[in-house]
Image 1 (cartoon, rainbow, N blue to C red):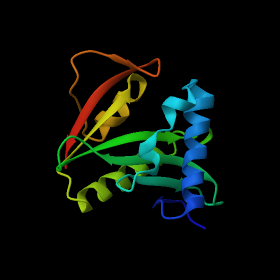
Image 2: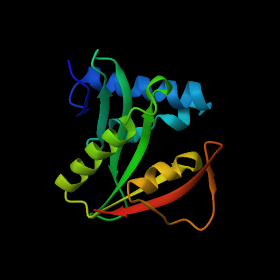
Image 3: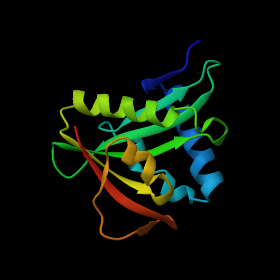
Image 4: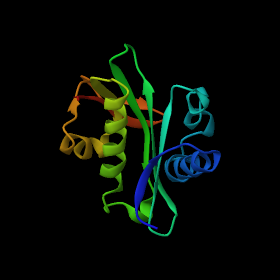
Length: 148
């Protein structure tokens, strides 16, 4: 096998993506399960992604949902297992999300970044759009945007 990021197409791939999110957000950051999982996870217009290492282990996840207009997508739930952080998985996930967004006809992407991750997104050409830090699930965030 090779390292890869795939668009979720099977129940097993979705289960793998949700398992990564559970480890990163629920276990790692104490995000309540009822805030981590929502009806968007089962929505037909949500695109999920899962990253697999060379051994076939799920190591990352993300999702893309429609936003407030037909030209904007929202990136959510970007998660990389702690054991593989710094290996480029976040960038590979975001590359896959952006490619899918372009293919879906989106002109821009928005996201709410945990403040510790803002630098990562800035390196991917996202710009801060919120005036102040806000709390989401007890974690400080800033809103960001990128034109595709």
